[in-house]
Length: 365
Ligand SMILES: Cc1ncc(COP(=O)(O)O)c(C=O)c1O
Image 1 (cartoon, protein in one colour):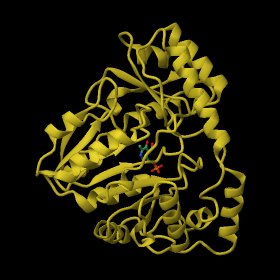
Image 2 (cartoon, helix red, strand yellow):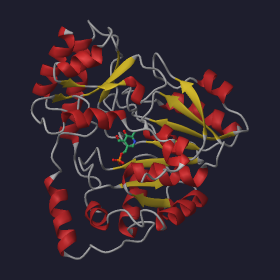
Image 3 (cartoon, rainbow, N blue to C red):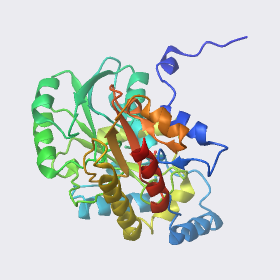
Image 4 (cartoon, rainbow, N blue to C red):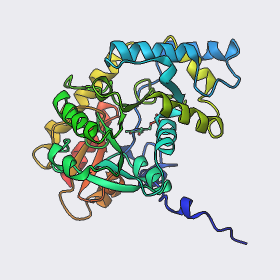
């Protein structure tokens, strides 16, 4: 007997990134994995200790759906001091990773047939969830420089635009939008009173000190951030959102009947580790970013990276990705992030020696 799945579920396609992972599963050590979107660093030891203590001291029950009040207050402080956002802890919800924040925010804002502008290329989850919700996706093409294009945005936005989504530092391009670009975007969005969702998960991976939060100049912003990448805890599922009160209220309602709460022990442990010094890890990825540019610039069409831990590189010849995988180097086809399939994403979240080996092989192809 077969069960027919919902039309809504059928609108989601399987992740091409997971398909690359599946290829490597069971063959650990055989592949050089330049496909992975998570740091290779271990979890900071202070955070491990705090988490074990949190379990032992009883942070094992349900947490409030809006999140731990101590952590929300710490995040509000951070958003005020580091991001210059006029943050209030009442307008912060703790989510199950930024993915949880994406799902709650989009389901709080988007109705069927609503128009949403997304930059292309972009982290694939946005498109999938928007399809799931029946939104009409409007593509803001950022090729070839991968920057925000004010003139294009002015043509795409209208009274029908329900939301604009950006991600900086960007997955997969490695670009970081500067203050000037974001001010122009805020001005355009403000004319139509359109909210902006800003995914800032790679904030700490900012190699040219360009990072700027649009939420500091535009109140109608949903700021998403989290600890998966910065603290190397992708499996712990911890993120947060800051947004106008009515959006947070809707997100809390949906959280109550879906995720219920983000993991309580991770929330408790993070209270004293939110500002932990991660500069050594970041410095190593900055070096990796420079290495990728230095080693690849002669044979490939790529832009010097500014942030995150990815390079988005033009495919130089036919079957390149297939040939790379045959040579045991895992990379991700650009179509996982874009309507085009002209590029591949290389992740440099790897040990420098593995990265070097992988780059040598890609150059040999
Ligand atoms: C841009 C972006 N947003 C959100 C996420 C999801 O992160 P989390 O592990 O916090 O759910 C990722 C993960 O790769 C990402 O690249």
